[in-house]
Image (tube, rainbow, N blue to C red; front, side, top):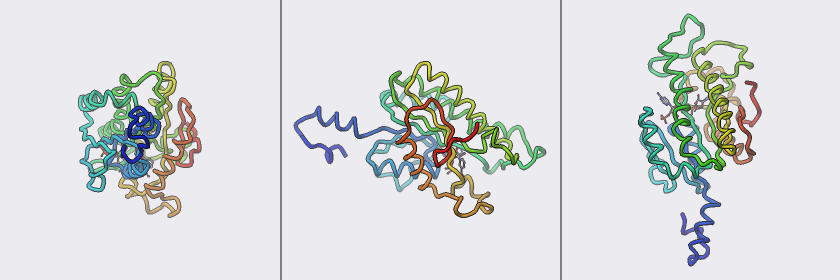
Length: 260
Ligand SMILES: NC(=O)c1ccc[n+]([C@@H]2O[C@H](COP(=O)([O-])OP(=O)(O)OC[C@H]3O[C@@H](n4cnc5c(N)ncnc54)[C@H](OP(=O)(O)O)[C@@H]3O)[C@@H](O)[C@H]2O)c1
């Protein structure tokens, strides 16, 4: 990658400067998400560098990518802290951080239609993955950030986490977990605005996207409202490229604000 861009092989300084201004660094957590996978492909096309973190192993399609470092994590607090320590030199140079993790259903749980289906243990699992886990990552990453760092943090939220927009009800645990994520992110933004003024937070709603997460709920979605992951990835990356630093925003795939 480096050799391709070097115009003056004798000048190490020029080379390093060139790489610094052209090669941005991205950290993507929850990298097995279908939207995350599409983002990784798009970012690699631009020859930027990515660190991807997931419970899963690197997919075969990405195994030979030179600008990609894939790290497996069990998402325990100790595991997360250990990865952050391992990345201590890279974290202060990051340009963007994406936390994609989110569950709506799995073998053990399904979104509730009515309060009679609510189960505290399922609520705790959804809350943990969708709201607590992103915060444990931010808590563990923040001590390594530089105070002057320009960093764009994107947390995958959902329109359904909007309290103002909730007209339909249902999906109690998922809704509550995304609303909690929004509140926690807002708190984090306030704290960061005191110490790390160039860090911006974006809570992102991808729209209904054709992934495992939405599979059981797609039959009532009109085809033009069901997006493919690569469309959403391109939308998000283009929004983030144009974004001028703002403490916090809660936006959809068009970049339009969502009521809190
Ligand atoms: N698809 C939609 O229609 C839609 C709509 C609104 C919002 N969203 C949000 O968009 C984000 C990405 O979702 P997606 O549609 O791309 O879904 P997906 O392909 O099913 O990806 C699932 C994501 O959740 C993580 N995950 C799953 N189970 C987990 C667990 N037990 N512990 C920790 N992490 C777990 C995965 O991380 P690993 O890489 O570690 O496996 C992966 O990042 C989610 O936050 C979702 O809530 C999606």
